[in-house]
Image (cartoon, rainbow, N blue to C red; front, side, top):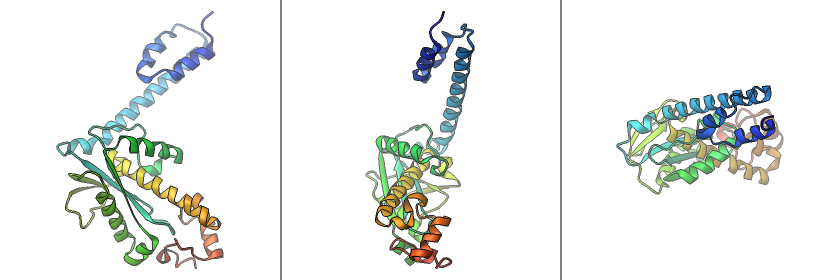
Length: 252
């Protein structure tokens, strides 16, 4: 009688990826269906890891293209579309050849995954900067100019001087640093994806705090975007101090 399947399951699940292949070989001759199912699951795990490593390699394409630069900074924003709250920009300088598993465009990730990645980015980054423009500022100068302003602020908050900026699709006016706009950059560049996470998590957490002050609008749930419940609350209670007046003219 071989080792209990529950014990094998625990052993394989807790095994480090680099050791999993050799550990699997110990049970290849075990013909029990439960063991063979566990091995098949391990094969899928290894295949998924291989795909993830290939994806991460691809996301370092731009960082490696400009690896003659000491400090490569990714820039992205969160909150251009909502009816309420600020627009937030993130600027992140990662160490050379830094890989962060599962890092991707923040919109493609769950909130819990974003929170975990936020902590990892903050731990590993050479420098992180955050900038934001208030709803009043957005109304004053328009959302595009407010986004540029938040991005310039994020860059200015970095503790190191970037040699090059990798931007998600835009060229930021008023910055002398070399810029490389990349279409869908938050899914193509490790640095931009990291900035995307920093901007999104920072903004979401801020909207949760606003929700505590003004619970009637439900900011914690929709984060200021124009959901049906948000529009209903807006019509019922009128605009709050953090609503963008130029964004809500169709609703009130």
